[in-house]
Image (cartoon, rainbow, N blue to C red; front, side, top):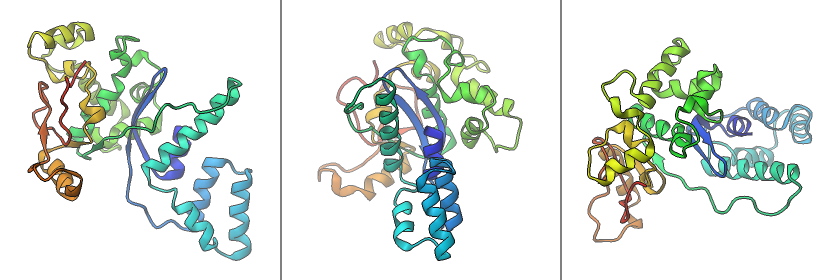
Length: 283
């Protein structure tokens, strides 16, 4: 469902992690392109299927009228390249499927999805992607994310072309052997190429180190639940976060002079966040 929805909306999936009662998806949303009628028909076919009423209706409209009526085109274009539409429709479709499968009805999701705007720079995207793929490790479900079936890293390591493309979008050009692309990302997840011998510590042990004011490496920090990655609003370099602050200056109080805040207590030296947290940033 996620892949079909992304193909329809024009949203790129970088990586993801599907957990027992929630999910995380890291997406890239390109600017809306000029889509031809055939482009729209192709997206509809991928999403609904070639024999679905919606697909046949669109195809017939193009065939009989020579082009897609403006009202139909506008209706479809409103659903393109918009992360809110992508998430809304994905959750709705999953809810319908889940309710039917389990003979239930009513609302499935407890609240609207939460999002954070991430600067599209390799060093920033890499950190957030690793944080997402390490979700099952933090939850104590596995010690190695490769043992967890439902995440982008395992998907890519198994040879899935779309998953590899997502990781290659920040780890390489996409033209090289997938083993090289996934291998570099693996170093971020495990630190196997570095000197961080403590990167294999359990999340429980890492929390103990943090509570006693011990120094944590980036790799160790990613094995903790970091609230900044859920509640920080905007994540990126100082210039990027300041730019977002100035762009939306009217949403902040007059006493606030700057936007970028450091990620307190964590070794992300180049990263800044828009929303500082009053409570502990990790747990």
